[in-house]
Length: 132
Image 1 (cartoon, helix red, strand yellow):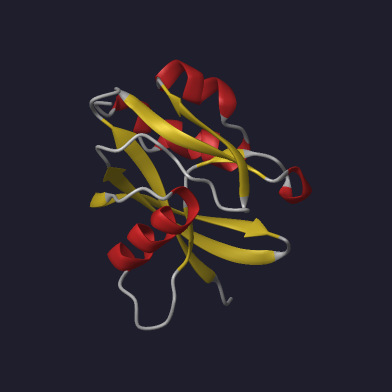
Image 2 (cartoon, helix red, strand yellow):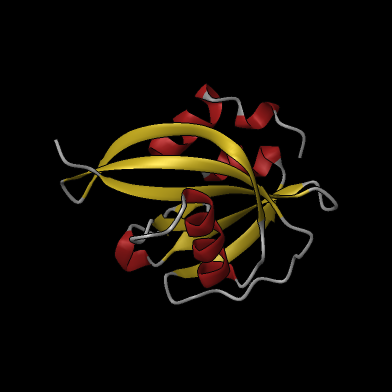
C-alpha cells in the first residue's frame, strides 16, 4: 500500500481559549477541518505544518508536538494524517482559495461542527481534554 502523507494542525490560540476551524470549499465536501496539507520533498514535518498553516490562514504558528496519526481514504487514495498540536498568538485569518470560511471555536462548538473521521479522532486521541 502506498499512502500520501499529510500534516494537519489542531491550532490553538490560548489567549482566546479557542481552536481554529476552516470550512472547505463546497465543491470539495464543504467540511470543517484544521489547516494542513501535503509534505513537500526535502521538508521536515514541522516545516510542512508551519508552511501549510501560513499558506491557508496567513498565521505564523509554533508546532508543539504530534497529537496523533491516522489513516483514511480520500478520493480512493490512502492518506496518512500526522496531526500536530500548534499554537499562535495571532487571530486575524487570511483565507486561501481552498477554504471559504473560518471560525475560532471553543470545545463545545468544535465538537458540534466536526463530522466523520476527524470527529472520531478528536475524541479518540483526547483533543478535547487538552487545555485550550
